[in-house]
Image 1 (cartoon, helix red, strand yellow):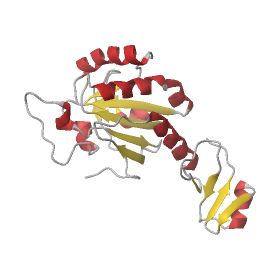
Image 2 (cartoon, rainbow, N blue to C red):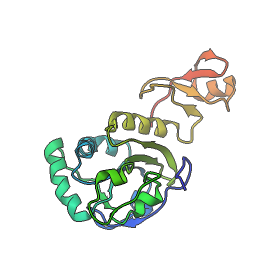
Image 3 (cartoon, rainbow, N blue to C red):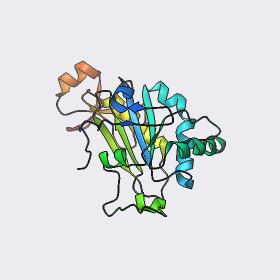
Length: 219
């Protein structure tokens, strides 16, 4: 069954480069990002892990923990980390899950519809769409999902922007418009009338009766 927005993120216990991870316990009261990959020592994934490592201070500033998933084993992950760090110029200090038994990939519905894994000669193509991103809230609910093909590297500036939008709108009657970035006005939800919206957010910029903007800070 697909993991959908507002579902409770599947809990799991798995070995990782940071030791045994009990996911919900590890997440605690932080936001979390799971990003997954079809195999170690693959070129696009190496650039992606390096990008995540380079953004370590950004994740910390947003009370967000990142965790990588790859369907290879821990020993390979440890070797791969050296390549990631050499390419990216930053330590890959986030955990990388050993998902060689596909427990996490299956729980999060990351595999292609027609996948199968041979006992010998497996290539990244066999687990190709294990290339997903989940943003998860402190309440362990899924806030956002993205899935990429093997040929398209993920844009972590967009993932960071999406995380900012999720955090800014979490539990608040606001929404982020197209191409929003922190510091820009946000859309006020229609659950508030104009008077209620002005009382809560101050002056409104009313473009249409159903499209009202307000200046708000970002958490």
